[in-house]
Image 1 (cartoon, rainbow, N blue to C red):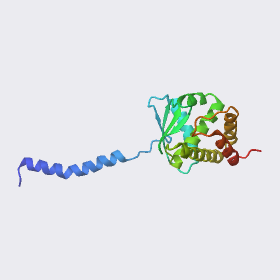
Image 2: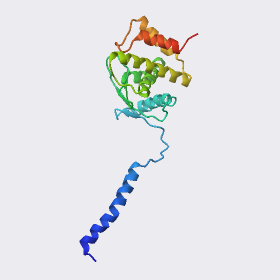
Image 3: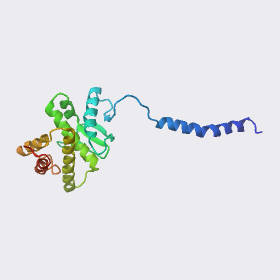
Image 4: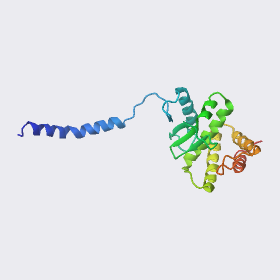
Length: 195
């Protein structure tokens, strides 16, 4: 029989692999917690009321998408370029902080936020990436079409999309070359005929 030090090594060898497996399983397990579905909202120190508001607005739209179990990361930040939302890949959506803050107390801003969220989710569901201006124009139209469809599935008035683009056209407003207000208005009218 081997002496003490060899026996200790053997015990480590026998117990170490099962311990690694057990700890790995514990680390990968999911525990039912009675918590609602969660979306990662950044920055981490976001006010809990704002976080809950953002989660609720995203989850109700995500529920009617092609992938209702999808959970993006949402970052609240100043985006610039006149944008109120941006999608940087299939899991990363950015929303203008001031739009969220205003939407919490103003109904018109709430519907603007919902349009923005639906549009950005449309980008993510379509797998869009930033690309050439010509291709990006098509991506914007596709994201709008998906957003309008999500509104319809939720029973929300898609006339809000038509009215928003009409106001922009009346003011001569185009955010940039990628967001052609005339093309977006024409498409919204086709997808959401008003009486």
